[in-house]
Image (cartoon, rainbow, N blue to C red):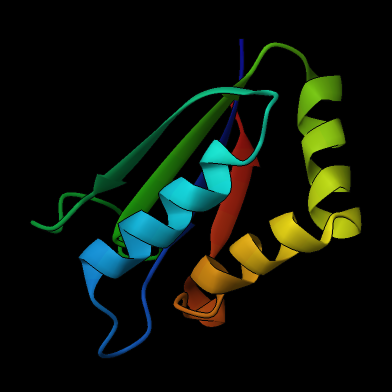
Length: 99
């Protein structure tokens, strides 16, 4: 399994439940995403350069991840779901990496 991890901080005034709903709708639209976890590190037990929200997405292969990213770019429905959650995130505090 290949895991892609994102750390994000929400913009001021954004409701966490709204973010989780939008993120879940987006991730559910990725057919090659085997599973995902959305976690909130509310108590501050993290490096301060990481956002409060951690999203892990699991893919069988790196090609599945690549195909999913292509789908986001070239599919109107998926890009709208991506925009729906991305507009809630502070771009200055967004980090991602592969595990």
